[in-house]
Image (tube, rainbow, N blue to C red; front, side, top):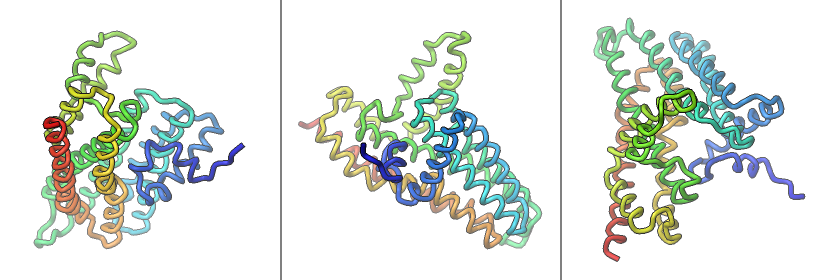
Length: 313
């Protein structure tokens, strides 16, 4: 019987090696996998792990309230720990087949809770402090944080998640991706009855269609490409198109990783070490926003090229 290496076993619990960089595999996914093995042996459900990760991640923000770097280090550890658990719940669900709708909802909710806590406590910390222009931050830090979080952070993560699912769709097909369309999800939501069996799914779809709609509005040329694909091939996309799309999409996966967790948190930690946590918001507003626009431009450009080729065959 073949014995698989640790790396092979870890990769088997991931959606795709394409969408995971070396840092994610070795620093994030490997500890997550080891935690998942422990939870599997203890017969702990993935949802329980997700709930614990939400609590730990929310606690991390509290420790960023203080100027004391040792308190900040505790918060950093808690955030890393929460992220390991966030990886572990998905890996455990794929290992055991314990995938549920509520688990998917909570998994997406977890990161929102973590960062809301982080933003909130950093704003409490900075409100009385002197800003670079010589006056207290006051209400301005709350406004900057709100724009950074609700506009920049939200859109950056949404488009990164969307492009990963598009990549997985061309790599693994519809069954290997969570790529959906707004009109289809909305039709499903409206068709579901208000009863004990479907009420939660209906409410989930009510919020999810808004998220999907925002992703589609950021990618109009992909929407045209996807429509043309469906009209010509349905879900039986020729392997040549799949392979060529993967080739041009793969280089963008490193940008989707930057737009989500690890790089963002690395900058957060650096800003805390130098006692300038407001730099974290500046990084999101300027650096990550430029990267978001660049990634969208690259993706939209090759989608337009593929559409032109199919329509003029």
